Length: 215
Image 1 (cartoon, one colour):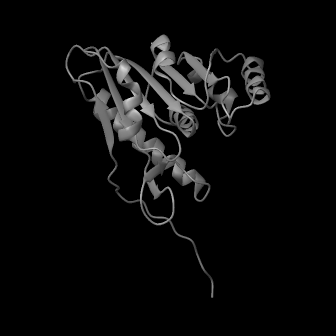
Image 2: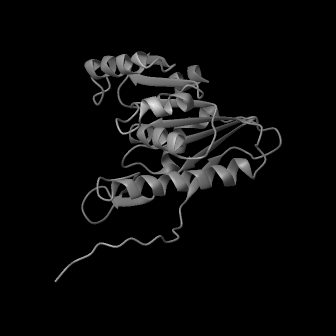
């Protein structure tokens, strides 16, 4: 007997969190994308130092949730896995575009400056979204990660050069050794991709003091 794989597109309920008070005073919106095994409700708290009467935080949560250990207890989320890779990417790109439309394009903040910050696994998610989706942003911060190899830098150069790219890495980040960082910097310089590198004293973590300096 022949086994055939089929695909079907369905509706799925997704959630995101906001911090701050939506109003006509908002001139800055931060969309923050969590890392592997995190949840948006917890992740958004790292950024409370950003919020004021003119700034709004938006934290979408990845579509795939799972138990971090065993069959119960604490839950985390992941943006994608290697199975059905391309469909996973398309799904979260469409999802993030929908969040963008709901919060910004059709909300109060059409003239606000938009910053997207991805942390850890969220850095790859941010890059894939910005280069494959339809949302327009002003600033891209990749914290604890870089541009994934599957993003074609040549074809995405115009987009990436338009988003004021900053890469943030702790000097003790256990996931990004110095050799890997130097290789990434060389790769970006070779194609003349405009970027800034911000190093801080710390590990694979969000630090409030560093965040305040980035603001």
